[in-house]
Image (cartoon, rainbow, N blue to C red; front, top):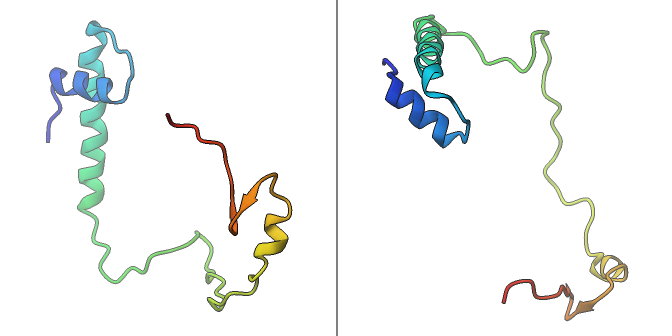
Amino acid sequence: MSIDKDTAARVAKLARIKVEEDALPALAQEFNTILGFIEQLNEVDVEGVEPMTSVTPMRLKRREDVVTDGNQQDKILSNAPDAREGFFAVPKVVE
């Protein structure tokens, strides 16, 4: 894929980055360099390589997916400046 000057201008506009007209060719070339590197990475054979969480071997800590805290609605709502019918009451902000 090749990025031209018009595409670089569109990307800059979508990213809300002001790029002068004379800087667009350099930006397009930079995009093309990045895309070339990505294409180069896609050529690497990663078959059989497991995903890593770090550069050092380690396992992610796992825990049981159980509720350990709950049924404290009354305690939580006691801190609210305004609570009604078991919910936080907030002022209306949309008219």
